[in-house]
Length: 231
Image 1 (cartoon, rainbow, N blue to C red):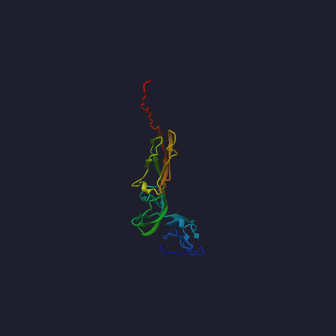
Image 2: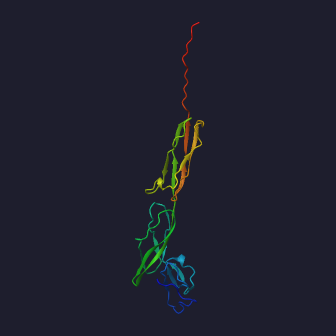
Image 3: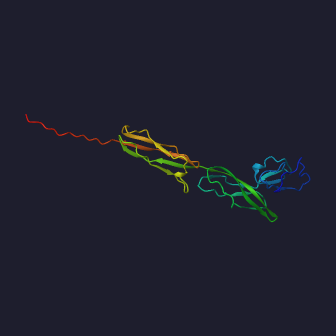
């Protein structure tokens, strides 16, 4: 039924077809006033809800049920997961050669060309594949540092843990910044180094703060030589 645009009207489409048990619809979206038979196979159940009429206690069955539709970000496009072929008596093969799945975090939808084959013939159809790619954690850490009282704060060293594949800090749309409350005049002691500002659509950012230790500055005292005349 690949070229059908409209199926019947007034509930009479299959009125005199008591032996009809299976109907297979191939368009991605349902025809106008479409009718469900006892077993009605459709490529995209989301687009085929609420048939106009039905016979023989009709049940509407999606041709393919995907077993997985959520993935973790890996830096690469996900592979098609395992599936259940619901079309009894047919084997299915997928042609993914012209299909490129999105690899970045988000919720995506595409159609995969498929061929269903049996001894009675075959038909081609596009099967929907809707999937979500989730963020993975990325830890941003600032290393501990030490300076002397009265000195300026050093440049803080930042490291990363959790990048996948060939990803690096260039994948961040905004780089992290390190800050501390310590100034050159701050007293000797430990001060927390905080991180903020890192942004990436593919990573959930976690921060590990560091410690800036302000140490005593060296201080020397000298007594100048002196002379005195006797008496």
